[in-house]
Length: 227
Image 1 (cartoon, rainbow, N blue to C red):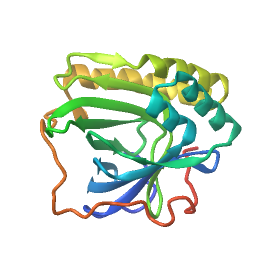
Image 2: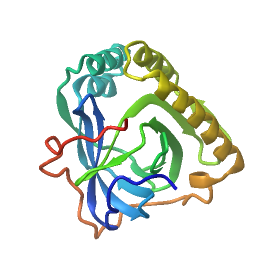
Image 3: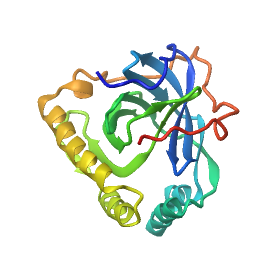
């Protein structure tokens, strides 16, 4: 069992998932906690929830300008960025992550509440904080079809990942851990095991739930970075 870094949260709590780098918050998003065993967590995020993200990344999301993604990585390396508000649109996201893993597995559900895709985010192992968890997206992702038959490594991520390695955003040690995590995840998919086993084909937030929001300390609670 992985070494834990704080007490478990209670199901139903609003928690903040933050990407942190160089002692600063890179992204911050509110989630509803669905389950927390102490070692593993399941979180949900859905249409209409507001989060914070760096300006260059949001510029890319709005207009598809690939150069904005390059600038985002360069801003990371330089430690210079500003955050803007983003409103989540179109899909619901349920994400599972375990302490010590260099990845999380998300399930995206479309407007009809049907499973649209799995999304594997390679990231630093999460660290617990008083308001949620801190991690850091390591710039490479894997998209998997609902039937697990098709895997797609995102092309733009491969370029972004290489650029991040050149600039020192992704260290050599992290690169080795990501490579190992890639192989491990592909094995889980091929075996239809772990978070890919018997995934719910439909999901929607309960209409009676209160909406999670970022807490007042989203930008001021001290960050916790994986060493």
